[in-house]
Length: 271
Image (cartoon, rainbow, N blue to C red; front, side, top):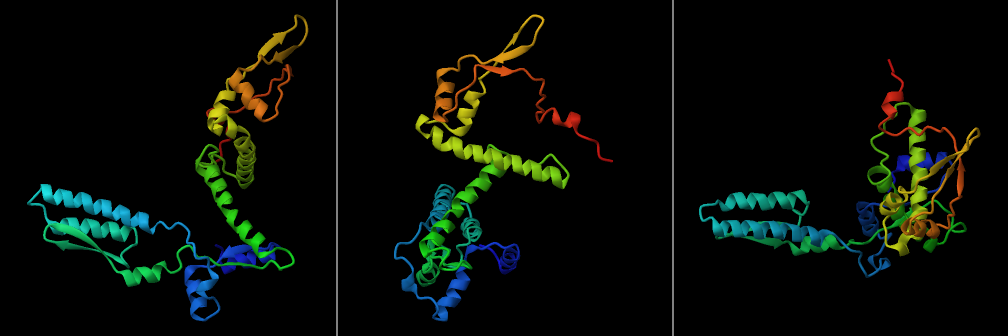
């Protein structure tokens, strides 16, 4: 979801947008009669509310067992623990805990839950694209593609690509760093479908390809070249899936590759 200020920035930059409105905004439109509930599909999307309630139930069961095994334990302390879990998961609008003897019971305020659940799985999209540019289905499909964008950001930030932490300081170097990460992500996008049938992850495949090596061949009184030995069957399968054929020889250059460990030695000292 993007806010009004971001929408103005996009318009000034010449971009169009597809976004979703918030649930309070949907409620306002429903109350004003602009939207009707029968506009939404009857099948709801998966909602995590049941999982959260199950998490609270597990805490309650554990504390109930503790109270049974420890006659001198205070029920008030156990009750506070369950209340804290309910508040942590933001379920306190419709879920409470009560003490009955030395047992804890969860109570659901069903009318409140029904009202909260009314818009579960419902969303409304808005865009400035004209109808001639995209149909409703195209707009919806492009919005659903956002899941792939979010997955890409997760992979770039925290997974194999490791965009963070950033070891550069200037704006130019930071942009270069992020560009390299994005290019690496494009490589991952090609590797993933190509290696699916081989039942290997991208990380496993890259680790296998790290076993590829070259042998330096020197001619007495002349130059030298690098010969690539025949890859192992596992490496060959990975390369064939990508339609890559390795050359038999490579020119021998003195290119220096700077690793992360060597980088601090060459980093300029900024006063």
